[in-house]
Length: 389
Image (tube, rainbow, N blue to C red; front, side):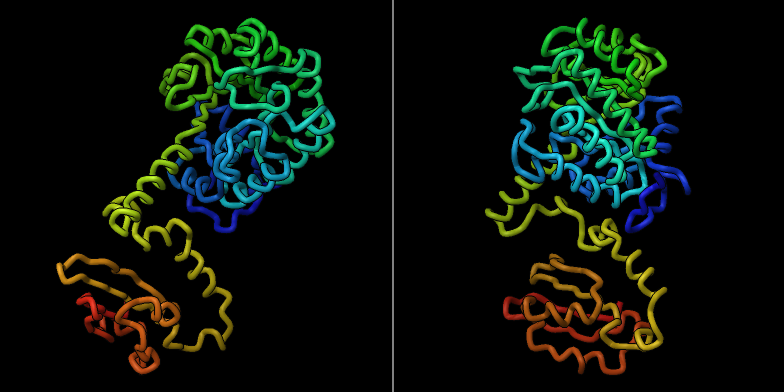
């Protein structure tokens, strides 16, 4: 399977030209180190993971269930919802993305469909666990697992689905039997999963460094994954260097992005309710938001396909600088906005309502950088300035 093509090709690509997402993931895991993979829940989060320089992204079921449904990770989210979310994520980045496949959403035949669906969605890897349905977060109480025989057969079904698809998707076999039964049972199961063809092994909710070392001693040539559940999980939180020394190749962080997002949204809502605006410095500028989302790349690429008619000078294509300054001198807005867009939104901005943009843009062009086109005060005393960017 060839690599999926993201809408915008980022400046730094994790997946090389002609390389499948799974091949990229295998290459990274074969290199030295405990490779960090923060868990994202949407395309924007994945874009930020890539921009921060991480080599791998992990779509976690806990955070997708929280963000997409507003519900706990308790087996409520479906295969269709997960694969749909994953497709949007893999299309947003050019680094390998691992998808949480939960317990495969049924029996061995369901698992085959799940694996093939994740392949078609562009995932580099899929994690499958041995919990009974309904499954839940491995660090919560009351975990139950299916029998040894069924668990092994599920991994074999996943391997068969990969072969039938002509894919090289990485299969991560997870066992929740540490909390459900015992550490000895978990160690037996992951060895059996490796023998059945799993590419990466994972025991969730290991309770000590000694247990982590015992896990990494199983099938030494098969990469091991660690789950650094932030804020109070059962597994000790260790640095990447410490995890590498124990023997881990892959490290996921399931709660960081969803956790800080929840806290930031709550803080912003409290501030808006009490003062009418978020705290200064608590959010990026409009320009920074546009940069992250790729507006400038979009505008640059759009020009490549402009026809002669589209390329004719137009005053609405001029980028203007809108500044709104309070009486106190505090700057409320200082943003570059295309004239056509500013004209459309002017009715919603006190002080711009009723401005004849055709008149003030008469004879103006982008070469007149800094030229002041409008300088007035609105009814509240705010100073409104519009100039050529």
